[in-house]
Image (tube, rainbow, N blue to C red; front, side, top):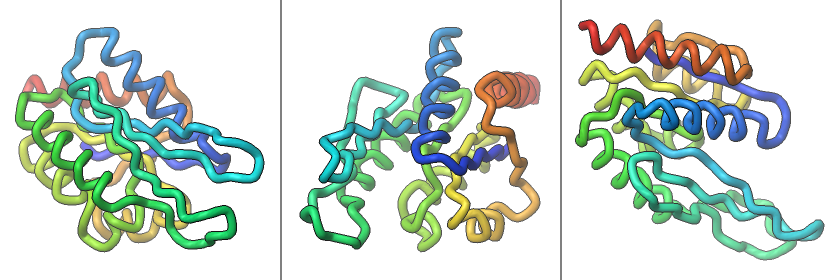
Length: 171
């Protein structure tokens, strides 16, 4: 009950995850997790990265401005951990599905959403994760035989989510 999507284009997977979440929420399904919104700031600056928490109304900025010439990771770990706490609380409220915007470096290192993913799977809650190509090998090592690749197609991913939610409800 662990599906994942990957994409090659910048922001491609983010838009798939947002659309899937929007469709499932419109159907009244209780979701936990977060989807990413990239806010463009201009041609010479990097975008802001915001996470929308699906179990409430919080939107948290997880990027930090390191300057125009910076090359390092812009992730604000405190912002990410705040979102992880909010997502964990949402999962505890009885979510039908956990959506994780990205299995990234923090998760590869055992932090970020990794404990929440394990918590959801242990509770029988299906999980949908976006994974960058560069992190795919580490994600698959974490997921072992549980990981199911999905196409970057909104309809197919939404159908997968509905089917897994139905299976979990019947169990």
